[in-house]
Amino acid sequence: MAACRSGDMLVVAKLDRLARSVTDARDIVDELTRRQVKLNLVGSVHDPTDPVGRLLFNVLAMVAEFEADLIRAHTREGMAVARAKGRLRGKKPKLSSKQEAHLVELWRAGKHTSVELAELFNVARSTVYRAIQRAGEQAAPAKESRTAVVTGRSSAHGGEARSDAGQ
Image 1 (cartoon, rainbow, N blue to C red):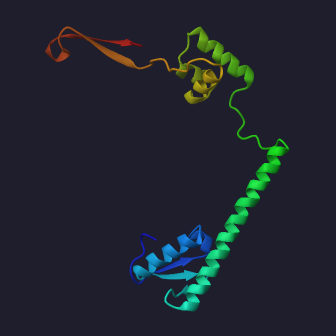
Image 2 (image 1 turned 60 degrees about the vertical axis):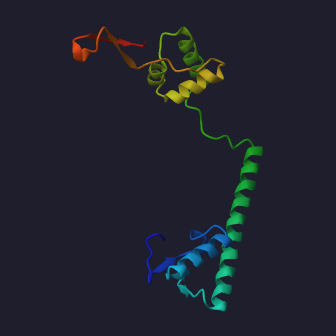
Image 3 (image 1 turned 135 degrees about the vertical axis):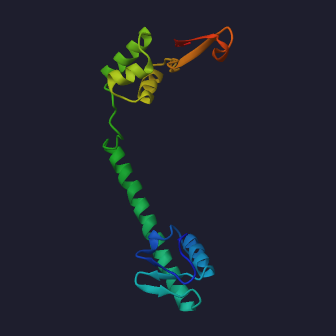
């Protein structure tokens, strides 16, 4: 719509693709009319200045909004039935309960960083943090970046600089 200029025609195959509600549809048509852009709805050109054209457009917009509301209602009903039958579970977990327990055990031992655990278990760091959090641990990520420590004057003036991991 942003690319439409005066004299252009916007072709819309279905009204529900143009707007989600009657109010939205009216606002869009008003904007197109103000910019002198014609609207082609399902093969017929909509004339916003004609009373019959406005009536037909509003009826089509109401039917499109009604259809969208029905689809949403049916989807909610279907999800409620699936949930009641125990079939709506969501995404399968990346780690089994045994794997998650092992990951937390390795975390508690303190010999692996969260990045190493993520690579070891082939998961994202966020999965590692969630597993640790579910186990009741503090999931603060270990400092895994390198920090430069400057002793004496800055290295530009002949001072000594060294890099230490984990500081």
